[in-house]
Length: 395
Image 1 (cartoon, one colour):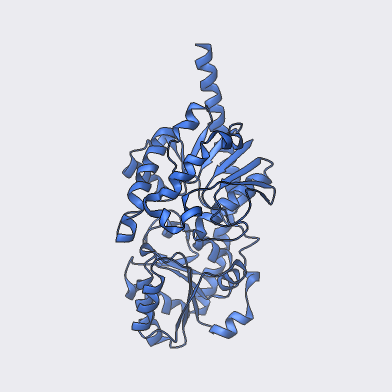
Image 2 (tube, rainbow, N blue to C red; image 1 turned 30 degrees about the vertical axis):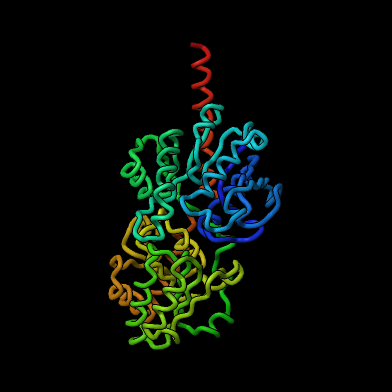
């Protein structure tokens, strides 16, 4: 099949701000290519690169939009997504996707009825619904929600990355469950594995190392982890916490960490490159993820595949994904989180047992298996449209 994936981000030639989304699109494109499909990604210039590019056999086309011209301010009201859509539908750019067997939309775009008018099969990917809880989010998500709802109702077929995401589609957008296919996120175990363990990391930070990685945004609930650390260090004074990632709350949470007198036990690294991130994953004793909302929780797979036990909130889909590869704590409860951390750090035998379980859990999420699920469903959608067109012609 000729498959076109439309996404605002693609991590080649460098990673940008949306780490999980970038990783997802990269693996989806690369593994569909490994299944011998002709794959093109249409994206923006946010992560750098040239207009025409190539990455591991995947063709890349980059189009201009408002953010590339005026910077981050274009994100307000999701004008950068809207202008990306406008440029996509310009006549000179249609040649990049008009002959596609199927188009995958990894973002909400304006006017996606266009694909329907051109008889191009379309499937959208839905990661999760984001409730608006901060002033920052009021600037962005009302328009994002509107675009999502319009797109999903227009083009019908949607892939949700978890049962929790499927339930959100039904609850918030009124979609028919029969139009939603659940295909989970995947993990590249060649990249994320215990072999990345680093003696240098252990030497620098010690043998009781905790790790958090993610965007510094409200729903990640980093303050819960910081408060938990104030209790952990009373029991285990040499416990250390490393946090990677950037976002609008980074400076606020660095300040909170200092106010809690955690400066000797907590270190914010900001954005880190893949080489260091892989080492951190495999060298940490526990990966701690206090987020209260995720469509899936890709970082949990990345940690378990690296041989690191995880602790996450008792919220699906996260609590379901980890199975016996980690522990859960009561959502937004720093005391319960601290107790779980202390328990594992003091019980090496239990830690090792959970580590082995995690390595088994991730096997079923290997990206090649996930790509095969995509392949099967994309063929179904394409054939369904072909049969519909044939039927309308014969009538």
